Image 1 (tube, rainbow, N blue to C red):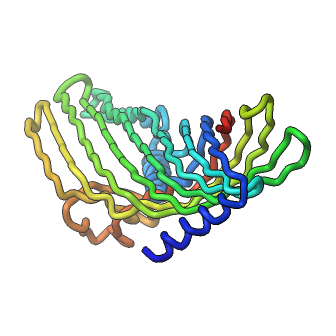
Image 2: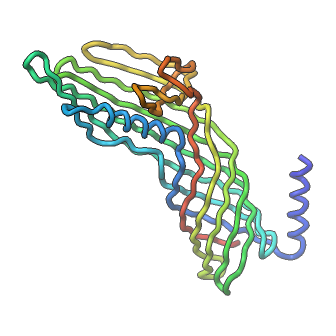
Image 3: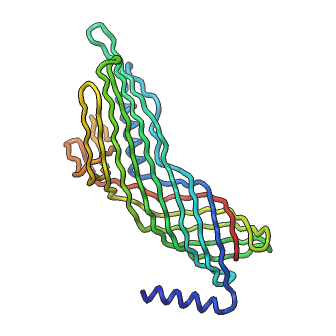
Length: 295
């Protein structure tokens, strides 16, 4: 608490020197993230689908990874001096696309060829609301051009939703379908920093281009899980509120595949290794453009 009051005192002392103004900045663009365990699991599942193929099997489609999405941020900056400012802001980032993989396998029952169809549709949704503090340093490079160096800590409130809609059947017979869902949210501390090029178009108004990097990671996601199945073999519904997102390596023959599951307790099987609670790495960067208003 003493540190907070000390910072406020320093801000007021600098403002009393004769210069102070507020700047509002809004920017929009694209952001790219690492994705970490979720993306590793997608790679493992696609590798497994390729490896189990035989002359009578075809794989169509590919599951999308959590890579990029739209990004918006707004920030109110208190410019203490012409060179320094303190900003408080918030934003919104969203990533995730629906994707489908189809697996068709032909096998023979006596002399009759039968087609086994399996279809999975993944719909991941990752949304992040960052709330951040920035220290800004402005470097004039021309009469209407500034370079803005900034950085500071942030709190990243993250929501992760996942849906798997699947169905399968044999030659149109014995149809089975189901939907598995998982929803969780959690916050974490991180850091962001970047550089922007500002152009002043009129008194108190300008445009800017910005590149920003961030470091943050969400782990131990715990949330609500459901699993519903309908069809020839099963008709039931399960749900729970204390489920985790798990990561592990699955040994099949002489190969290991990154895999994942939603479960209350740690998955256990002789073919599993490296079992741990999964993480989604939010570390990445964004490219944006926006407006700034001084008042």
